[in-house]
Amino acid sequence: MPETDLSIVDLTDIQGIVAQASELFNLIDSDNAFGSITFPSILDRASSISQFVRSLAAGQKDTTGASFEEQLESAETILTALQSSLGGIVDLNKLADLLKGIDSANSKINIPIENAGFEDPAQEDFTFTVEPPPGWDVYDPNDIIPDVTTDDSSATGVFNPSLNNYPGGVPEGDNVGYSFLVDPVGSGEAGLSQTLDTLLAPNTRYTLSVAVGNPTGDDPVPGISFPGFSGYRVELLAGGQVLAVDDNSLHIPEGEFKTSKITYTSSATDMVIGQSLEIRLINLLQGPGIEVDFDDVQLTAKALPVGSKSSHNLSEEHGSLLNPLHPSSNLTLPLGAVDSSSLLG
Image (tube, rainbow, N blue to C red; front, side):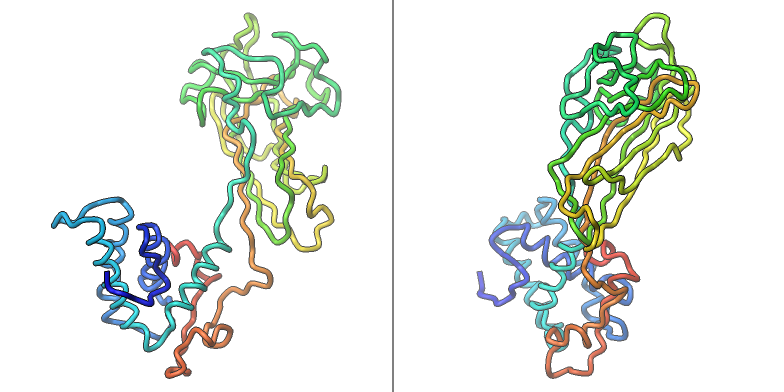
């Protein structure tokens, strides 16, 4: 392979080309990414270059049946030509470093949740447990769930519903978590909670999504059915303090699930920074129903740049990116006005 100083690409593996070079191609392809500067010759071929890189990512061989090494060498040649074409205006190596930083800052992290789909323990069709699912605790501030639960008492657990309960099936796997309350309406509320190992971080946007179900039809216990809906609440907490809540905002028809989604953006001055995050899934017992089901619990975190602006003018804030031979270039990268996913692929 010919030598190159193109540091935006790690040619030792295919992912190096895809993860770094594709960022640059998508940026070039995006509308008005470079403000008043245009690169007709680059724009004319950026799409085909991008397709070539993506085909490598998908593990496809080109029409000539070239070997993996030959494809890498071809990619290296194309990228070197691209650097040569743009190098008179922008230092692509420094631009790539900035792009990687932006990509890292805008990436979402999936926070681990134990037994998030309630598949543990496995259950036969139309059977259930009467103890909290592994990884989850009972949330029962009004003491309406007895210490010793039975098939027909108030309880929390795991349930493998039938198509009689959810004709369209459940969102994830076979099981759901449930809060089953047979006490009179208004007696209190109860459900499931989990304290996570993850601590609340500053300047971070958290998004919690939970599928909430309203079962219909019959209960596995003879003589019990699921008419009506008793209401739900989904909470995200840290250090015992409620950060965000969905208090029964969704209309959930019988026999269906709807996704509850709440967000919370922390600041550097939050009093509970460094405290453990917690999730609560609650049956409100406020209507003519006895059970609320939950499934597919997901929590993501997205770090936000401190003091970020709606846009960055690289010629003012990142002057070192510009080639000194072109100090008057007006290179503007819209980070806030345009969603970064459209720029970075």
